[in-house]
Image (cartoon, rainbow, N blue to C red; front, side, top):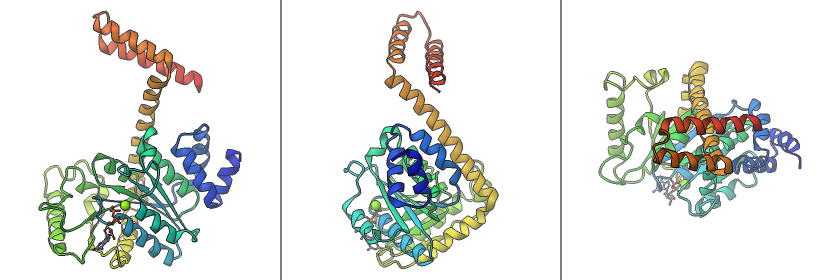
Length: 333
Ligand SMILES: Nc1nc2c(ncn2[C@@H]2O[C@H](COP(=O)(O)OP(=O)(O)O)[C@@H](O)[C@H]2O)c(=O)[nH]1
Ligand SMILES: [Mg+2]
């Protein structure tokens, strides 16, 4: 099928076309730039919600219940589950597969799992591509599930308009959220597994951490953050994802957050995403050139030798190499 045909079908919400387009974008197949260029004007309508938290905190269970909640309200939902720790290349964990089957007959829910496979071109750009395809296809809400294991979830969550941070009791003495940079990304806090002991303590700890990082509470607290965070006090909600208890309230909180952002706040977030994304793509292109082009590799080798022999300094060499990469890039168009 021609790419344009595929795009028109995806825009008309044909889920098989959506699935194929995501693969094209994710794997950076021949012609994916063309795909992207034609879907991009149709994006920007979905409410993109990131859901992150430690492994086993119940993210998949929770996302599944959120999807049901949105469906009950007549809204369509796309899910991108990102789990770089998944041992299956590009596949879903067994539990995720079972959950997906439940929605299999409902065209209003589309679930896509991304494992290690997306890493080739960078997991966050691959995720971003999947989110954009779902957005263009007209899904009202796009949920991104990411494992909170490090920097990656901060990056991926930054694709979202609203970020839900999930915590659970019993994962250790000290709360897992108070890692540098993690607290700041949460717009809605969820303490899942409220059926387990210790939930109140986790809630109290999050409250304390939020107070500390609140404007005025911390000298640098508000400096680096967007204006919306200065007025939005992230709610802390308790859930039991397994039964669905409390999930409706989280859905409400997400809607309230979107409303709070309004046009200007949303634009601010999307600007930030656009900046980060462009920089990422530029650097990927440079790396790709260095990796894949024999002339660039040869020149890099030659320059390395020249640097080692003190015939050129590393900065001048880098500029020479950069110029070579750029000239060939623009010649290719
Ligand atoms: N007790 C209890 N277990 C839950 C709850 N929500 C999820 N779980 C269980 O926690 C485990 C991990 O859930 P999963 O959704 O796969 O977590 P993820 O790794 O964060 O995606 C599964 O066995 C779930 O059934 C809950 O509210 N209470
Ligand atoms: Mg999961």
